[in-house]
Length: 326
Ligand SMILES: Nc1ncnc2c1ncn2[C@@H]1O[C@H](COP(=O)(O)OP(=O)(O)O)[C@@H](O)[C@H]1O
Ligand SMILES: [Mg+2]
Image 1 (spheres, rainbow, N blue to C red):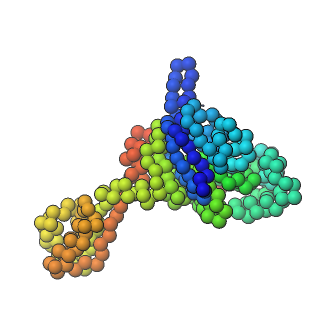
Image 2 (image 1 turned 180 degrees about the vertical axis):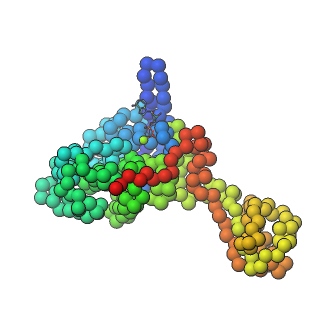
Image 3 (image 1 turned 120 degrees about the horizontal axis):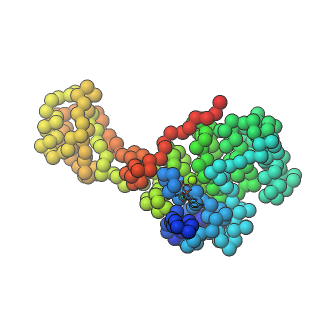
């Protein structure tokens, strides 16, 4: 079942003397239970996309529906049925964590008798029981973010939009959040649409990644599929039992392009244009020449390199995860 579908979704920002197409002709279809990451550098249109999909910003052109609700005509029902973590979420700082959650429960009409149980469940899920009766304003930035995410999913929405969910979290908190997202998607068939400029995160979390640049979707697929796009740039590492000089010239005779030689490691790295057909040939020739091999390994280019090539480096994103928590 499709959880979300967009057709040529477009958003222009216009003022008297400026015109910007922030999202350009975006067409995606996302299945229930997917974790879809929209990955792109700052200013590429991720937040604008999510705000349209969550029913708080009208598109200029194109259409979309989430859980069958049209994002323009049925935006009210849409908003009641999805969860949204905005880019800069704000908690009521003077209220405790519990009060913040109870506030959201009322807003979404969660039945009174369910609230207590749901608070316990969510507190457990995010491991925030120690903080539950503290004023939200006293929490660290990372802890606030966890509460904000807990709040976004409090009313049990089927589709959840998270705009940069872990950008303010320390690595261990970011991992907790990622694990929760994966668990919710797998066990409860919830669908996540996540904006991130963090490639590390997209790669670990997502069933599929859409790479966006200047408002345009420029690549899409599972992390593995995206890596395959540059399969021909793989490097093949051959490791031998003994290092014999002459391996190099022998390989050259076979028209194999040599990338690196490392006699200490007893390895030689080569570039093979057609891995499936050429690799067995090369191995056969080497073995025939009594070069004893113990390892043949193909190293594919990382998603990071592919991503950087796609978006060029002019607006390079950050790959670090910021430390914040005390
Ligand atoms: N309300 C707005 N008015 C005018 N321009 C905007 C507005 N919001 C965002 N933009 C511009 O639209 C582009 C995309 O922004 P945004 O969707 O926030 O990207 P991202 O979330 O990928 O960083 C940027 O160039 C940004 O400056
Ligand atoms: Mg953004």
